[in-house]
Image (cartoon, rainbow, N blue to C red):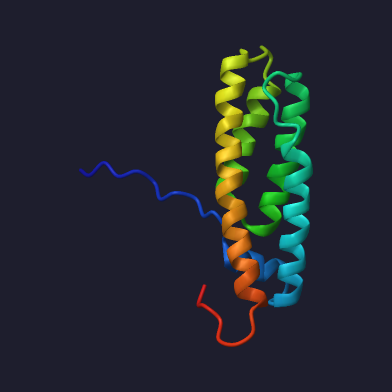
Length: 130
């Protein structure tokens, strides 16, 4: 019997993004830009010193935006943060800081992946295979 960990979720599932945009590369770039704008707005509310409902709402919104483009790893981490923030017992500031740090790390990695994808989708000439 082998003990293998499940494969990590995709930073950006390009097949999902393509399906959501009907294969239209210009639309995919536009959707990525909308996601980047949403991430900029909502990430400001990921403050462990704030009320848990505030950052849980921000995590919920980022989760939805992430699912829309196929940023599955970020969506998963945001879902965990949302559940923590909406739990019956308020999390400690330390637990909130650790969780929101995980969200911010995943967000940073995702923003790098979507910037790369936007460049590749919008660049003239041969495209990189997804």
